[in-house]
Image 1 (cartoon, rainbow, N blue to C red):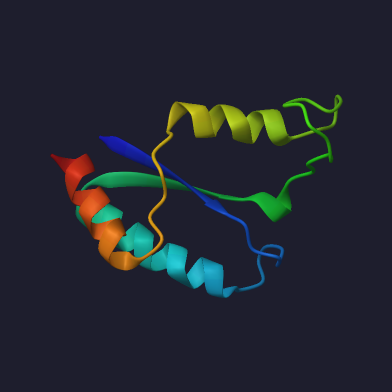
Image 2: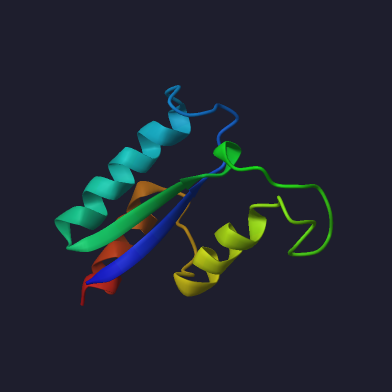
Length: 92
């Protein structure tokens, strides 16, 4: 089964609902309908240190997110039409 990583860059913390999350839920439905699994990372729920490297200290959680991005990298579409096209291509 194909997998898709979705990064949520919402300003709100979990479990507060955001417009970004509403869009992600629509995206997940499209992917699931095409048998593509999804994983959502809400970046605001992680401790990410400011800096220019991929590791800014022992408590920096960015490396965990970066590894997932590298494993499942596909450009994320900016609208639902692009999303449907990408999901169809991934399911073939």
